Image (cartoon, rainbow, N blue to C red; front, side, top):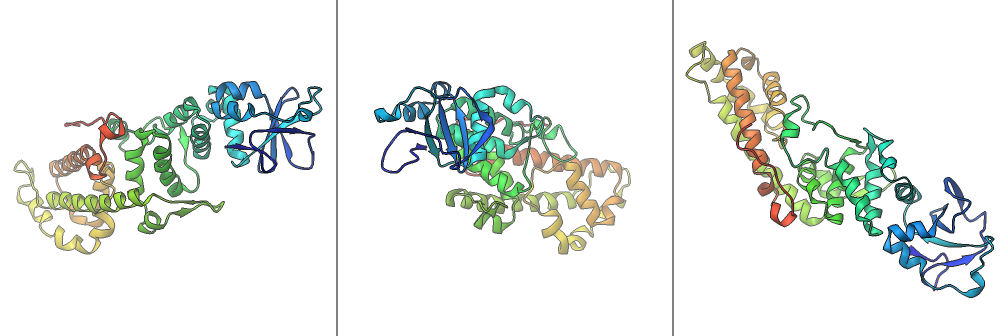
Length: 348
């Protein structure tokens, strides 16, 4: 929210600028500007009329009456407003207001996550839904609601066409993505953001993640419980899949009983490493990667015939689609309640 830089009054006041009170940001210091917004120790000289047109919060703050002696029109005095937001976040919002779509385009295809976060948070605070929506659309290129966009890239499970880049604190980013969805109602990003939170270490889920700047990103108690329950369900499903793979040898196997003999010792051999390697919460991982994990744990898997390997891959893919189809239920979410379309598929 906008607030006065002097206590005890609402709205904005005009006073002679003190050059020692803040540092001017030359990127957003217009000679014909009519108002100075100060965030932390940085000042932005911008146009009151433009900001008022774009945001009812700015408009209401700028419309507060000021004393007559502060209303000098000779350009020697400017209305000054201090804001509680960080300077870097306020600069993102102001640049998006002035530059429009060009602001984010010059970052593509690697828009910093922090920029999108700032636009969604401040866009929401200042009642600018267009800015919130555009920033959310970029997050939706990763936190998708259509699994075919993930399955199209079988190498690493990352959707094709992602237009932003996570920060060095990726764990904090995925938690913040959940909170951004909750704050703004941009619920399309919520299911997969929660899913990625389920992949975090338990300590991060329970106690949050501290960024380098000291900010702590943490889930709400409700979403913490939601992720803990979902993790248990993912582990159970992963274990069932593994048992199905290890107990199966198709009748059409080209090696007859040879592959059956390969399957037989797997359960006992792999038992010590199942928790770390194969029974996983990442039930949406690409089939190729999960089969590689299985191969790395056991030399027997590498000896399977081509058909048995194909059947194992099919089982993994089928299980992955089933996991996607049931993801909302596992996370205790409803597409109707979220107001989103969840693109399910019965056959990959």
